[in-house]
Length: 92
Image 1 (cartoon, rainbow, N blue to C red):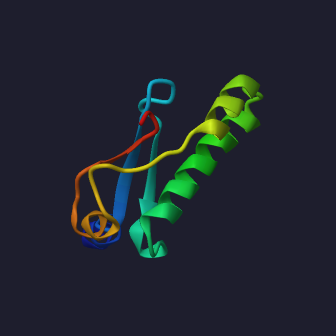
Image 2 (image 1 turned 90 degrees about the vertical axis):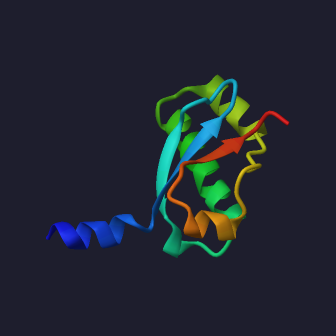
């Protein structure tokens, strides 16, 4: 059973916000479900906005709507082969 968990987990990647306001927000995604980094960023951004909306954090929601997350450190190809955390920046 332990071995099958290793197989599933090797496709999970941790994505973290590198942002003055949203620093540390983290999501894990199965990279097999994506074809490009833009879709990962879109899902990451939408999950953060959903968190604020669900908890009636209107000002944070509005600030998050303005964010343009992007990645300086990895291309999609690099995400596929790395096991390191991937940071999404919004402050450039």
